[in-house]
Length: 375
Ligand code: SF4
Image (cartoon, helix red, strand yellow):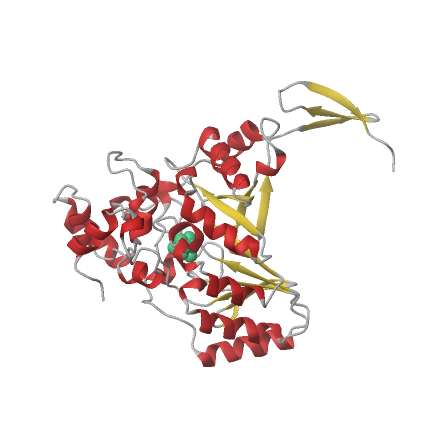
């Protein structure tokens, strides 16, 4: 049960060091803002919008942890943290080519909770619950089904499928956010996966380091450490999400021998500039996190207002490549529709073939010939 909002806000506005509950991830979850009326009290907006936003939230719910809420710059009406978590009337807009499940995940779900699309890897969706509901989420369709966590019976069927499919060497645990589960429940899943000998690596997709860094506690990382090799993919979208708390959470994971990669989504008005993306990726390198993918925002219902033209992503990569460390430059990808897989895109550095040469363009724009050895 959520506590009284006034109390939440008072606590949320206190510096974390003076709030005895601040570092308790369960307190953060219990006190997440999940109602428009409470959001209105916390962040007064035009009362006329209440009914509209209530309607949006009845379809696409909201959840904002006190920690993530505390990162909002209340003086900025276009604050990038706020835009990622506050429901918007624009989520109701209809856009061309927008669908609930454009990637065809339901079609590729071989059994409930398991997507087996690629030959050697499979994805388990453990829950649809997240500490913060990102307005750009690809799995927004799941939110409409109520809150669910995979049952023991569903998990048994998943383990049996994985056991029978020896070609699967890489399992991704995702959601929702799988770290919303208790450490004990999560350990049971990892333990069962590790009894399947052909599963070489386990990946965990979680936004907890960004929106609920308190969840990355010593108990959790000590448990995860036992089931390595594990790779953790997280989801920072803006440099202001890199805080002392999120940096420490990533550090705890890294110190357990678990590499951390970042998958950003390109979002209109939030991170769609070379300057912001460069600052984000340089900041990630400083905390030991590798900028891995920059995703074109999928054409998912309720996210059309946050999508950018594809050219914007190419322009950003062009503005980064060569101008900063290669390690800081993520791969810009489109997730192909209906399970076509990830399609990497990059600016045109390769111009043409010419006899025994290729014609290339350097990062500063100079065009030159490069001898092409014969095979
Ligand atoms: S954390 Fe991931 S799964 Fe959860 S709402 Fe955000 S984007 Fe969606």
